[in-house]
Every structure is written in C-alpha cells, then in structure tokens.
Amino acid sequence: MRTQVGIIGAGPAGLLLAQMLHLRGIDSVVVEDRSREHIEGRIRAGLLEQGSVDTLTEAGIADRLHREGLVHHGLALRFGGRSHRVDLSELTGGKAVTIYGQQEAVKDMVAARLASGLPLLFEATGVAVHDLDSARPYITFRYDGRDRRIDCDVIAGCDGFHGICRPSIPAGALTIFDRVYPFAWLGILSRSRPMSEELVYARHADGFALATMRSTTLSRLYLQCAPDDDLARWSDDRIWSTLRERLGGTLEDGPILQKGVTAMRSFVAEPMRFGRLFLAGDAAHIVPPTGAKGMNLAIADVRVLVRALEAFFAGKGEALMDSYSATCLDRVWKVQRFSWWMTQLLHRYDDHDAFEERVRLAELDYLAGSRAALTTLAENYVGLPYAF
Image 1: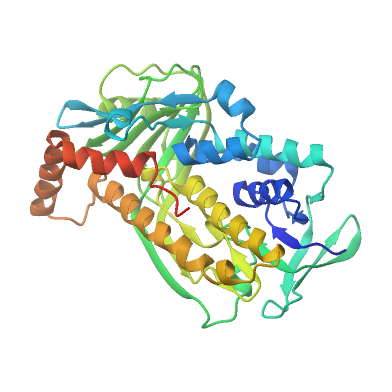
Image 2: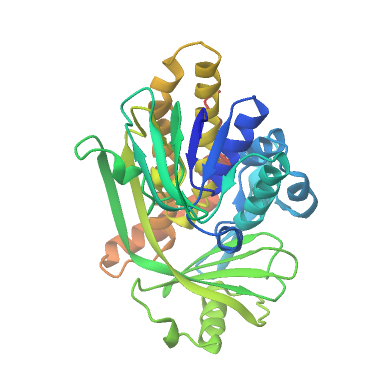
C-alpha cells in the first residue's frame, strides 16, 4: 500500500489530521491497534477551547458539537468558603469554552472518515515504523490475518503517550521533561443534574474538587486522592459525602455510571520531529487535566502539521516542516505553565509547609480581586491565539 501520510493512532489528533488532509486533497491511511468500540467509548476530556471549536467547524465535523455542546461563558472558583465567578467572555472579548466529551468528538471524526471511504484500519497488531530518517519511511503491521506494509512520504505519530512512535526515535535524539504529581483525581460520571451551569473549581483544606458535566443530566465530578488509592475504598456514599464537603453548595447525587483514578503528570518530548516522523498530541506531551488542555493542545499541533504538510505536498519545500516542532513547542510550554499553575494553586500538597499553604491562599485571594490576574486566567483558559 502507498500513501502520502501514514497516521498511527485514531485518537483526536490522528483522526482530525486525516480529515483536514482529506479536505486538502492529501492522501492518508490511519492505523489503530484498538477497536472502534474502544476508542469511541473512552471517557476523556470534555472541554473545548474557542479555537478548537472553530477548527472542528472548519474541518466539517462539528454539526453535532454545535447542536449538543454546552457553551460556557464563565467558571467558578471556590475557596475559603466563598465562590468567585470568572466571566471568561467579558474578560476575553466574547470568547467561550464548550463542553463536549472527547469520545463524542472521536465518534464524529470516525463517522466522517468512514463516510469518505478512506482507510481507517482498526485492531492492527504489531505496528512498527521504519526508515524514519529517509525520504521513504514505512509502516508495518498485521491486519485482517495478513502482514501489511504502507510506504509513506511522512508518518504522523498520533498514538498517545503509550504508543510506539515516540519510543521508535533513537535514544539520544529526544530530550524528555517529566514531572509526576504526588496526587491523582478520582473521577465519576453520574446520572444527575450538574450542580451548576458552569464549571466549579474548588480548593479545600482536604484537597481539590471539580464539578463539570457532559450534558444537562450527566455530571462529571472529580476529587483529589492519592495516586495509589484503591477504588474499593471509595464507596458511592463516601464519594458523594467528600464531594459535598469540598464543593459546598447544592450537589444532587445519582447513580454512578463510571469511576476511576487518573494519574497527574506534566511531560514534554523535544523535538516533536525525527526525520519524516512527526509527533502530535499525547505522543509528544501530557498536561495535568486541571487546565483542561489535553485535547486542545492536540488540535493545535494538528493545525501546525497540516499547514506544513500542505506546503510540502504543494512543492513549496520543507521550511514549515522544519519549523513544526519549534512552533508547536512554543504553545506547548505556555500551556504546560498554565496547567502547572492551576494544579499547584488548587491542590493540597502534603509535603508543603504552612508558609507555602498561606502563600497559595494569598494568591487565590489576589486572583479573585484583580481584573488583571483574572484576565490572565481567562485568556489561557479559553485558549491562547494560534500561531497563524
């Protein structure tokens, strides 16, 4: 098989890349080692920046997003027994964020890909990439009982943090920046009305909590816990009582449909390119979920990569491919800074002393009373401007 761009991974980055390349007349094949049911059923992030909504709209895969997504113009910060609303739209010239589950966006992208009749190969095994530093890299795998090979001009590694693309880059070619946080999130999906029409971020003496939603009848709630916490220790009653204590306000409980513990880390691999392999999304970077940036950062990577590949296949040279990593990393590190800042501001650190605790509370108090500080938060939360 021959294609222009071989895409490893059918997550948001890989599927969006395939769709945007298709609109520009560039051929691609998407190879995924999981099943369609698996990738469409993974509960992941659910908040889209303004620019991400605009990008999905331009890509022609946002009809259901516009029908079902919940547009939010603000959020609440709760600490010290008080709630402070952050008017995102007023502080950013009308920008907003939209609640729409990542798995729903993935369903829309899969449907668009299948409707196009273009290759989307699920449950491929033994996927490997070869000759990355040549002009003719290729992908091998086993699919439908047969060994396969795809010859490409470019390979896009969109296969996530645990994928095969980043580890295929030779040792020494990457610099890794990694921070693992000393806490995790216990998250639940419940059939209950959200406690607020907007997200509620709460800092409590016992730890962080977040109230968000997936619809007007499905709540998504999180609370800070230990990274090695055993879910068996968290009965439904304990979860609801802890959430009420940390969030305050009125919280309606309901049947818990899913629950799990999510580790927290910050991770960056530099550069995001090796030869003709380009990393995008979680394959290159991970952010703690406090800033709601994971999928948004993947979408931003894809925008840069599409522009570079469009120029390359139009015969305009490799200058934009050469600048791909630097362009992406400029945004990646700004987003890492914001996600780290939100995380350290709102969580309890057991190893921090009373001085650090008071400084953190003073920063929250200053933030709530300063328009300049709130504008900084709002600008980052709705999404920084794209590079082009």
